[in-house]
Each structure stands twice: as structure tokens, then as C-alpha cells.
Length: 306
Image (cartoon, rainbow, N blue to C red):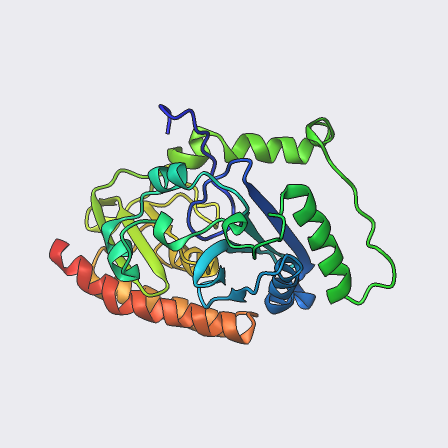
């Protein structure tokens, strides 16, 4: 990436890595937590695409597909007050660079049954019907605005404010976030020493666990966990349910014995907490499924170290 002069940042939400160039448009829906509706948001994007003669569908992996090709990936972030849903729109991305820079592990490629990233994604510009002008960034933004108003039954156009780089620089909170998301400490510096590492690929995504252990227990080290406590565990996943990883990180706290049984017991606590958590039906079902998969695999994977 350094040789290609590509900048790297790590976003707050879950999901896999994305490649950004001027051929990729990004959108974000911000909703009060009680009013959030993923399907309504997806309908807005699908309605926008239909205005260019394209028939799209939302897939089970939270991608948006046209003719079986991924043209948009979606990720989420939750807080008690609000939920954001954001995604990409591949208008005219350099797919050669995308394929070179996004290199998933072999297990992921085998599970997808494809030879490369580029073989399962497509640019919207290559899919528009003959005689229809390929949408650019400005036309897509205008069509999304219109689709939003139609979905919410607005009788007048929703007010819109354009923000340029000069405007963003004047907003201190955004400037702070931009600095953090691109900092080495945020991207790399929180990882503990990798003394024990295991990984696996599930139908819903991949996971990696990196443990730093002392005296047969997960150690304390200078990585800040979700609770603010230091922890000897680093976790990486492209799961679209970040609540699962956050809950596991809290359960596998410093001092937890590094044994299959102790990890199994901790994961059992995670399942019970998520069962009582205020999640929507579909999200709760998916979270519990992911915890069950990890609970079946991780304790046995750690047996090799005990």
C-alpha cells in the first residue's frame, strides 16, 4: 500500500475492508435506534438504482447485488441512541487496483468458490442498460435524495447541505475523528504480542483471536478494551455484528484462565448477555448464531496449547 501511495484508515463499524477512489460513492443513514429499519434503508438504495434502469436486490450478507454481482457493501454501528448504516456504491472503481489491494485469505476465497475479488464485484457503469447514461457521483446523490423523499413520503424536498473540505475542517469533532481513524495507534498500535493465535472461517465471516498469556491466564497489557480495561486479547473479524466481538472481548478479560473450559464458560456468559440485550429479532438471532459457532470451535482450537 505504501508503494502504491494508498492511505489506510480503520472505521468504527464492522465488516470487511473497502477500496476507495473517485469512482466509489459512499452513503450513510443515521437513525434513532428505536426507528432504525435496515430494510427501508436498503429500499432507498434499490429505488435509486431502479431510476437508472437497474434491478438490484439486498443479499443475506448485507451486500446489494445486480445480476449476482456485488455493487455495494453495507456496514453498521450501534449506540444506545442511534444506529448508522453506511455503504459503498461502485460506480466506476478501478477494479484492477481493488483486486490487488484487497487480498482476502485463501479460506475466504475457497468458501466463496471464486478466484478473485474482482470476479464477484462489478461497476454500476458496466451494468446500466444500453442507451442509459452511466450514473456519476452527482446524479447518484440527486437520485438518492429523491428516493429518500419518496420512501418517507415527504411532500417537499428534504433540505440538503453540501459540505466541502473547508467546512469539515471547521468542525472540531470531525477533525479529531479523521486524525484518529488514520493514526498508527488506532490502526495497529493496540495489538498485543501474538503468542497464541487461532483463526477460522464461518459462513458469516472470518475471525482471528490473538492471545497474550502469562502464567496460564490471559494477561494484562496496554491494549484498551471496550470496557476501558487493558486486555491481552486482540480480535479481528469481518462479521457484520460488532456487538458479538465486543461482548466476547469483555468476557475474555485479563485473568481468565487460558483453558478450553474457561473460554467455553466465558462464551456461555456471552450468549446469555446477548439473549437479554435489546437487539432486534433478526440481529439477536444472528448474534446468537455467531456466538454458537465460535463457542463450538474456539475452545477446541485452544486445546493444542493446554
